[in-house]
Amino acid sequence: MSKLRPNNLWNQLKKRKVVRVALAYIFVGWVVLQVGEVTFEGLGIPPWGFTLLIVLVLLGFPIALVLSWAYEITPDGVHRDSAAYKKSTDELEDYQEGAPSIAVLPFDDLSEKGNQAYFCEGMAEEILNALCKVANLRVASRFSAFQFTSKQTDIREVGRKLRVQTVLEGSVRRSGNNLRITAQLVNTSDGFHLWSRQYDRKLSDIFEIQEEIADSIATALSLSFKRKPKSTQQHVDPKAYDFFLRGLSYFARHTTQDNVYAQQMFKQAVDIEPEFGRGWAGIAYTYGFSYMYFNASEVNLAEAKRTSAKALALAPDLAESHVAAGIAFCMHQDYRNSEIEFENAIELDPRNYEAWFFFGRAKVQEGDLRRALKLFDRASQVRPEDFQSVLLQPQLYISLDQEGKAMEVTRKGIERVRAVLELNPDDNRALNMGAFALLRLGEQDEAIKWMEASMQKAPMDSIVQYNGACFFSLAGETDRALDCLENCLIKVGNINREWLMHDSDIDNIRDHPRFAGIIERFPE
Image 1: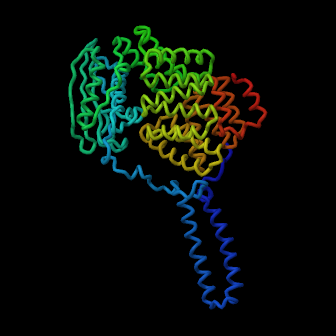
Image 2: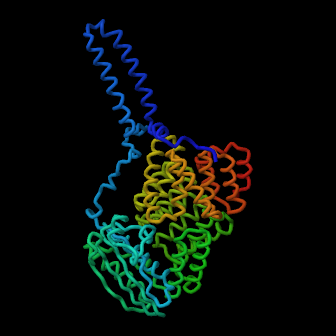
Image 3: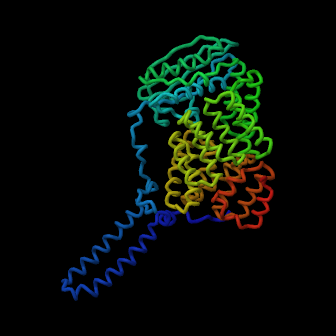
């Protein structure tokens, strides 16, 4: 593979505009000295004045270089350059101070056969979602918290890595319809228990148990637990709920095959409980994700709309129903109704990450890049460890001719990616998107390794292959970029045409004859 651009100190100096500042300073300094040499004598300034001028010009040179390294001049003003390896304000904050914070770990499976991991994860996720409704409580996302298990992890280490004051851990022993659930709230500063309880109940009591645990935690932290409206607390057949939890477990993995498995589980849930609104929302999500990421077929498009409408009819007070509908309307290019549904979802649950994130994606497809940037930024605030909503922003800033902002969010994104990879080195999405950030920052060797590793791990993942096309387009590898793009259509599955047409990352290959031929094969 050909070299992309120099990966050394010289490259960093150019990136931070130190070279440009140095050349400008030398030129201006030379002009000042020439003017001084001509005018000082005529103005009656003694000879030592010119000597002092030379000294001042020389002393100012290293100061100008240091300032240009540490600060960045952009159309939006002068900003401190995060590439100077200074810790952000968030990093300097003591997570043991301020508003209460918590991480919910996946519960341990103590069942005799050890085959209830999905149920344990689902139990923990449901409690996590309930805790997100507690005012003034910061809750670590499922994505981050579920990288840990209580058996293998030092609670104080969890607190340090997730920056939370408390951790909820527990265990589940399930035998037929009988449940024994143990939960404990632990202080991450010293490892002491703040609250613990054991529940011996029937499977049909699972919803009450989840509410009781969330309520008890809020009480222990001296917070007010705001219960969701009764319409979203639908109690369903335990067997249907069991299939629903299996679906959640598969869906969280975000791979092509797991998306299929999740869809099957959700369908079995609604077969048992036809009025199960959350089950229909789950089905709608799987069709929407299939269309956006894996296979943009007419079947997936039609089913996403049908099942999301069913979810809305059965569970109108559930944010997920509106998010699923927003995705479906967006895929049909009905952007007005898409916006209405996303706004409804946000009104119901302002801390719903998917609502902000997919609303942003919808605005990209619509071509409203400025609104998309605001929505992605909000998504990144709702989920502070998320890198996707951050690393989708640089290409939008570039399209808006704001190179400085593009570099700023790129640096922020790579910091989040490295934090994720510290928790889970095998996170392929982090490797794939992180490669872009490294490329933009001039770290080409590491960028190539990350992208190639991610593509090798997921040769049939259309997201990864499409991102490969964008990556090699930015890198100037035209043929390889076109190969990746074509591969998305021929071998892997369709990608979203509207997103493709507004994606500045592939601008370098738009005028190539092969590109036009590929576009012609995409569905309208």
